[in-house]
Amino acid sequence: ISFDVVFSDSISTPVRPVFDASRNTPGGSNLNDCLVRGVSTLTSLLGVLMEWSFERYAMVGDIGSFYNAFLLDLEDTPYQKFLWKENLDQNKETIIGVILTLIYGVRSVAAQSEVGISKLCDMIEGEFPHVAALLRKWRDVDDLVKSSSSKEERLKITQDLEECLGKVSMKVKGFSFS
Image (cartoon, rainbow, N blue to C red):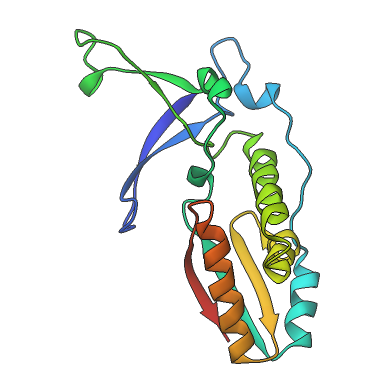
């Protein structure tokens, strides 16, 4: 997969490689053309507005480094190898590396991350049914929306969500509240 290096003012990731699985090879094909997209599970904007209108307190959250939190099965790692030469110097030794997480921009990662979230929901549903419901119904990729009838309920939701995401090395980067 070809990639570019992107610089930003972000404190957490000021420099990152951005892979482009839609960039065509000289032969005219690309990786995304060969992959299945998966089912869209996007939360409807109308549903969000209705949810917020039924309860007094709204919240939104963003799960940090979402795709990086999903580790590949070892049997799938040969498909994410890359070659590296220090400073792009052709005279340097070629290093073979492997990206062990999902790669943003590859068509199949949305479906792969949905499977991971579904497994997390199955794991926590008995103890935290409200968090499983939030992750299944009120999430769009890494963005969360929810409303509650009280500030205490909202606090409980956010604390339980953090605990559940922590079980799989995820965390919410930040919340905004109304």
